[in-house]
Structures are given as structure tokens and as C-alpha cells.
Length: 258
Image 1 (cartoon, helix red, strand yellow):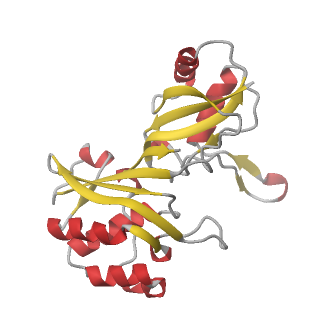
Image 2 (cartoon, one colour):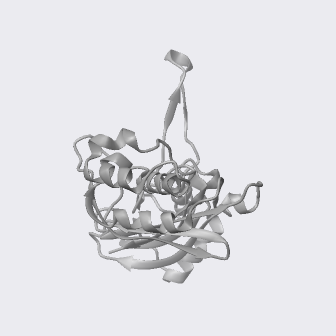
């Protein structure tokens, strides 16, 4: 029995998030259970086709419904008598077309992809256009009115460093800290599309989508940088920044580091 570490990529469009879920509906004798389609569920199904009998795989990060990944990390214990490449290929043969195992490696027996992570990198894509662009909008947020590009770039710098991000997301548990350290927060323009890269030691629930939404609000003149800075330093002023989230389809989990 060995522990394996996988790098996963997936198009999140048709997934209800990464974590396996169970839903109950109805009541009494008429209640029934449904299991929404999730990344974890599909991976576990593919593993069972290969003879895996474990209870669950562990993922490095939880992604919302509609969010994509090119560098999600998963780990599980398995008795596999063949090469790492054959495990990768066997899994891909059993996974749906909107998921793929990019690489497989052996890990330490105590490796935990979630708790051992030292940072996570996300990327968010958007473009400014007043006419719908259905193909492009599958992986990027179409923003209109147009943004002030210099304001967008400047606002990203506010989030660098160690801060209480309570105004920009919620902790996984009520008693958990909302303090996070952001080591990268920057926009770059590539072929008419803006890409935001943000790296932190950990993220609050929906934090990246909230950060993007607020930065766009500043760049559209709906909010000032000073108000954002105030909400970052004093979370009790969070109601002074516009409420909302950037759409999930523009977000990708790119990398988890250890």
C-alpha cells in the first residue's frame, strides 16, 4: 500500500464543486438521497474501476461550482502493481472528458494535500466588451462598462502582505482566523484579456472572487481605493465596499505548493 499524489485539471462548468456531497430531499418514507456531480466523486469512481477500495481521496483545495483547475492536488492510498505512468493513463481512461490526471507521483505516507500546502495560486480572467462573446465567456468574465486599467493594477497592490480579510471572504469555520498572507496580487494584460494572479498561504471561502469583484468596482469608478484599503484594515467597514462576487467561470486553481 502506497500513497499517491495526483495533479488534476478540470473544466468546472458541469461540476457542482470539487468536494463530494450528499443531498437529502423529501421527508419521512418519501425522502431520497442525491449525489451531485463533483470532482472528488468522479475521481473516486475512476479509482474504483481500478480496484481501489478506499473510503475517500483528499483534495488540496475546495473549488466552488463552476470553478476550474489546472493544478488541483489529490492524494489517496492504493495497492498498484504497475508504473506511475500506467496509473495515470488508467485513471484518464476512466475519467470523464472534462477531467484529466496530469501527473502521478509517490508521496510520503503522511502527506496531506490540504494541510501540508504552503501556498495556493489562483488565476482570474476577464475582458472588457459591450457585446456578448459566448465562446470567450466560457472561461472569462465579460466586464462592461470598461475599466480604468491603471486603477485595476494599482488596487491589486493593496492586498499584498498579512491582513485580516474578513471583509473579502468567510472562514471555513466560525472560530477560524480570517487573517491571511498574500504574496502575489497582480494583473497583466495578454492579447486583450486581463489576468489576475493571486497567491496566498491560504484563502477564505470565495475570497478570490470577492477580491476580483471589488477591484473591478474600483476600476469602474463605483468604489475608491481608499474605501477598499479601509475595509482591509478594519473589516467592520466592509459594508462600505460594493457587495458581490466575480462569476465562478473566470477562476482557475493553478498551483498548490508544498
